[in-house]
Amino acid sequence: LFGDVEHYEGNASLKPEKSNNMNLGVLYDFSFNPDNRFALIANAFYRHADDFIYQRLNNNQSKYVSDNRDGVRSIGGDLDLRYSYKRWFMAGLNATYQSVKNMQKVERGYTGISPLYKNQMPNIPYLFGNLDASVIFPELGGKNNRLNVGANLLYVHEFWLYWPGLGSTDADAEKRKIPTQLSVDANIVYSIANGRYNIALEGKNLTDNRLVDNFSLQKPSR
Image (tube, rainbow, N blue to C red; front, side):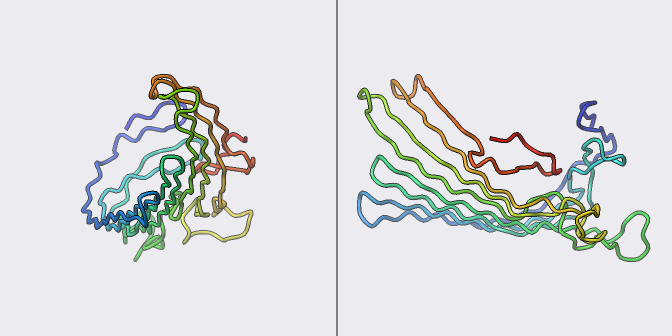
């Protein structure tokens, strides 16, 4: 509503969002033996939101501003698979897909059906996921101590920065894509006295790939 003067422009006419949602999920635990355990979580969802709140750039494209869309439909699902071996290894895979489409038929400044009708909402990732793994060394250096060495692979598929139904698709056009992003994080955590004290070393984006936020502003490197 008010903005922060520096990065967010206020919008005093912003309306509250209202939505109807349906979710269907399943959780299934299984194991081949006491040492190897699996957990599968799957979820599907449908959502229709009126006065959907989303972020866009202001008119001079210098700040974020929140605005409403009169009807946005989201359909998708996510999948989470976890695996553990005894007390010393854990791994997981998570993936999400969401089709977030504009269902507003009337657009200010246009006659007839809006050219943005049924467009994928801009600046919102629709396919992303991560893969993580950890090796745990229990009772290392003491009965109540442990060492955890982990890594995390993050993936975000390319998506539109602006409305996909407007403008040309060449590299110099305003309708640009946020590129596919892949990064690797790693961490080492030594816990003492059942986690009362922790010593941690963490590295972000170890492969030093070019990462950007939703507005294609570059994030810090390695």
